[in-house]
Length: 202
Image (cartoon, rainbow, N blue to C red):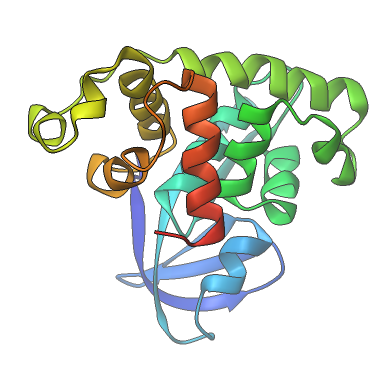
């Protein structure tokens, strides 16, 4: 598995980048959001990658942040959403806004991306909302809990776990979650935290 690439940018296009590592150029399909964050051709860059292997094709996708990579993985897990559609969505929507739209159940926003119809948009929200809100595969770090009394609340713990699915670290989100009312539901805490992130109020 190719986890990440670090090297010189030799090609930079709208949705495609080539990173040269030790003399080998790796072509990565990517989003406009990632391309906009990269330097000029000839500069150094790091991309987090996802390799898709099919019988007739091999594709490498690259992203500037783990959050965007994780959003891409969530998107292509949805029935009927492939790599091309995932890239198109993440070219129009930042990872922070993507997570907020899913948590809010705003399927209409996804139809603004070319090629994404109402049924596909509704499927994205329906399937990913459950994955984001009900994920329970990570334990909350006791050190974080000790600094945040609210983390003992089950809704807060579930919200933290859900946000970690998207690639945010406990250190990043714990201060933001502490700003939320611990009496809110899991969904409301997720939405409030993502609102802080997307607005830059950290």
